[in-house]
Picture (cartoon, one colour):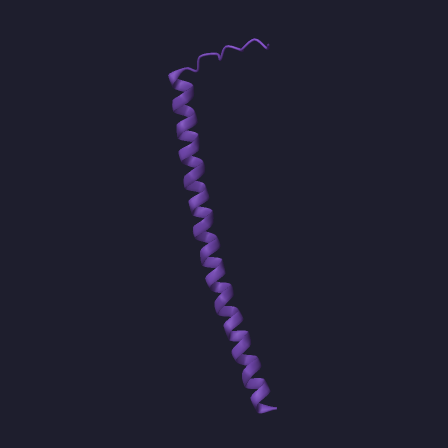
Length: 61
């Protein structure tokens, strides 16, 4: 049988820093999702304009 390794105690300061780091990471991730959503909406609008232009071109041909 393998001996269990004892976990070294983690200081409260280290835990607090890890929580703050995690909160920052989540906030940054949320901001990236917000930006991605805006870009997706802009792309959708651009694609709709392209499709409308192609439809008008096809009708006039």
